[in-house]
Length: 387
Ligand code: ATP
Image 1 (cartoon, protein in one colour):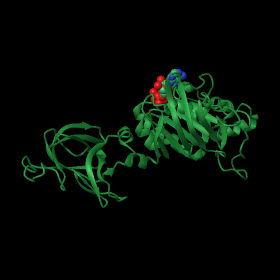
Image 2 (tube, helix red, strand yellow):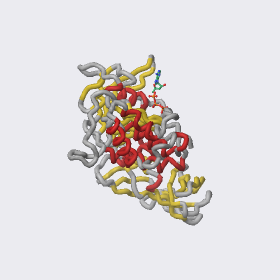
Image 3 (cartoon, protein in one colour):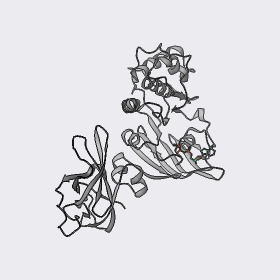
Image 4 (cartoon, protein in one colour):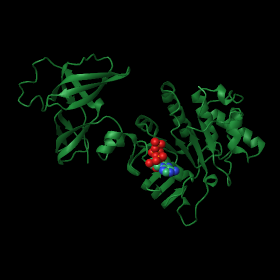
């Protein structure tokens, strides 16, 4: 597939080349002054408040995935870090130094030591792979440039491809060229804006994993903007969920998925079954059974989140569950009827209408054969109280 992807290195003056590979002091293609901070940053376009008081710290050497629905302000946030937009209020710091909104005035994009990988920009079609990667290194001496290109080709696994033109590459290979080009001048931070959205689905998972390991090998501080929850959870060391111009939650992928701060974050990050439950002495009393909560606590009536993969379905006979005095609900779970099955190959989503009419979604192994109309008893293996 011809690529729509490109890397553009913005790093400009003040570049110091790190020691060459194998030389004393060489720690690999590592970022040495990392870390990005946004402090109460605001940005409006006319009446549209795109970014509304964002405070966010990108951990040095880690990938932060900024995820949220379309129009929530992700790209604007990235542009504020890159320097393409200027905050109306607040401060942006890179490597501890204010680049916007601070006392020293705004640092222009080309002096922020930022590398970018976009979805839309093409690689230079008239340059081969080596030429594209070398593009951001034009101020370096020839020998050093060649050595750095060789190092980057190694890093992204494209040794032997240096003379190919972009149209002779697969989408995934082109993506790696874009990344190598962005990493070339050893930027303090790499910004990736929806970098996988032009790849077809079969390529995407593999390319994501490659990009992640390249960023890790480079020790890069990276900000990845995506609207794709799966991408954010699989790629981010840290995930920042952005809703309506604000950061709703920041945490590890597991924290934001398992312990969302509210219903909006819970719902955005994946299918969420929600139930009224009672939390007493570390046990959640849900309509799907009693579930111990690792963190314990007693909160009275709470909303319990049950992810689809945390449900079990047990086939039952047509009359079972009618006479337990709870309408099928209680410590042993709730009775319901399968209404739909969405098959995905690796697994399936089964929709069950509970006796009281509420639909729940369960994710099961694809081997399990369930037809609409089957009666089942639904139990929860795990449940989390929302704050
Ligand atoms: P998407 O996932 O669709 O790219 P996003 O989360 O990246 O969305 P932004 O592109 O940051 O969102 O846009 C946030 C809001 O600001 C949107 O309402 C958008 O229409 C508006 N906006 C962004 N840039 C401009 C601009 N230059 N002029 C006017 N409005 C803008």
